[in-house]
Image 1: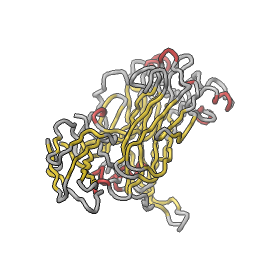
Image 2 (image 1 turned 180 degrees about the vertical axis):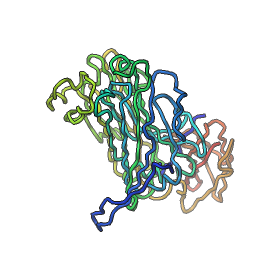
Image 3 (image 1 turned 60 degrees about the horizontal axis):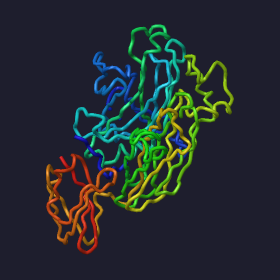
Image 4 (image 1 turned 45 degrees about the horizontal axis):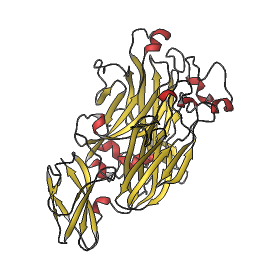
Length: 460
């Protein structure tokens, strides 16, 4: 059954690959900083993304192969607590039998505590980082490419007790590839279905003190395609626009959107080769505008050891790169942090629009990943007015939950992970939960004197 991530989310494995080292200087006191490095995946081998999931050889111990293009591993509580507030994520992709540019990404999955496996489509996930593989010939050096991301905001997720008390955090490494061209073009690849090796590590300075306050995170979109030709891809057919409505149960300070987009469509005139302005709105007010694409892709030419039409045989000028490339094979896709300041409780909306996008022949797409993160003054699950308090029992509950309070109750509201109201009652007891999926929700109680109070409820 579909699991939902708790509305309040405050926002790697004990093995031989996890280590602490010292030696980085602290500019304030000249003492070496302690650095913790955790290798989550060590050269896991990916296979043909279109083929049936490979069962032999099995994946490494403690690693789940969900699909040929998707691995997952759970982080232990000890590993989560070992990280400091600054966090670097390093990914290394090594060539096997796919010599084309493919998309890859790193995700976090929030899985019910204690589960030994999960279905990716049935849990809440956020995308931490995205990258594009180069055109690589495994027989030519260099045959691997590094990617580095600053994901310090994710350290707040790892150490948030409102998440870790109820969910295990799993890290996913996803790299889609197919071997068909390499089987005929690359020596040693005939008949093979393995495509890339992937390595993922987190690196953190653990001596730094976290002073960011109480974390709040709200997942809003996970790799959902944006286009102008399908009902699932746009608000309005013929326009490239998507609006996501959400509700904040309390004021969130220092808030930001974390947004990842990349334009795809390699057909003639496709979106992959046309730089378009992207406009971002909060509550219908523009808060950001950007045009994807690097000034030049030349720094990544060295990793493109397979001849291809993107890089060509000779270097291109900056102007030539800027005339057609939305991203560079061999580079990361930017994580765009859009600062919003302080946002009040209540309904809000995010909107992205790419008005010049054409999607020739109804081909191409823009995968959009988005989450909202900020800081709370007090934990959301203990917010109560001074006049009114209440408790919920049983909690967790299977079918219904009772409210106990000394104050008169006039109604209750239940919100899901997106801050959407999903259940309303004008009566107090009991709250019937039969109609909603298992997961964690927020119950807002309305009192006769006009006060309100909010608590978490868990539906089993």
